[in-house]
Figure 1: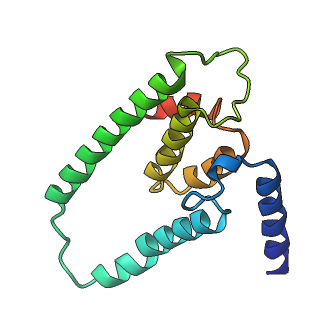
Figure 2 (figure 1 turned 60 degrees about the vertical axis):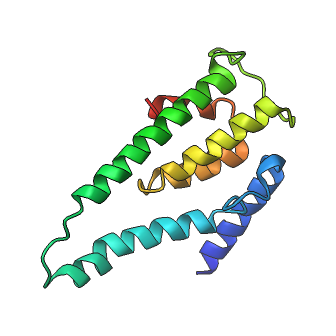
Length: 153
């Protein structure tokens, strides 16, 4: 347990030192703990609690809920795809070498917000949120947006 505390403390110090100050006060951006807890809770719910609660019951009919959920995800992905392109890739982003934007311009904040929304759209995949949690705090959202734009396709 002591190893985890030291490891976590070191990573949080790195994120604070090199992280993007524009996102410091945003929801779930204060460190790794919220993201890790959500991922662990999800896995426990799906692998342990859910099967235990459903072992003597008939399966739920979730067709209607899933249609609404999947439709919402399609709309959100379409919106995010547009935002990534409109905020940078259609304008002045370069595939070769992209300087870091550290300012508070409306376009920079728009891209920053789009990346933040994208990272929480992906919470159902337990490996993506952790890696994005590192990326969105340290690489200042520029090249990070290339891969996230492709995932919104």
